[in-house]
Length: 209
Image (cartoon, rainbow, N blue to C red):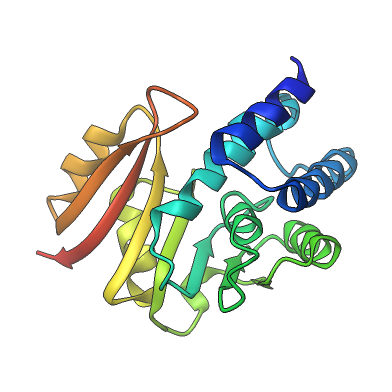
């Protein structure tokens, strides 16, 4: 695996500035160091940072309008996609990213990344089910739960105009079918830039049946 080529492809695909790329470099270095001590991502995917993780996450940054200011990322883990989005939209000074991560060690990693990169983000180390309800402009989640469960988990953070962006794999059609037994959805399926079998679900409305 040629990490340098992957890095260049990441930057070219998303038209990333030099300053933003440097911040991603800092995140990448921290991930490599911390992964030797704690399990942040699957060990066999650490070397796939630039495409499998960074690009896959950062592509969501442009899927929400510039008017979206308050984001919440559920189950952020090592920062995918929440930190990637925050880094991509650093020039948007009014953007605030809230990353929810119940694992204390992962939350500590995220706080270190925020400190080192200057990302405008904050970390809530708690279970999302225990957080007080509050509407956000955008809700994101990646590899967290099946769609029907994601809709339930995200409901306390959704208002009438909230946009949900959920990264999904090859089983997305089945997940949509299952979710529509209990929810009425208005959504768009957007092909992922990183995997022909992956999809980003862009959900404008989700109402319980």
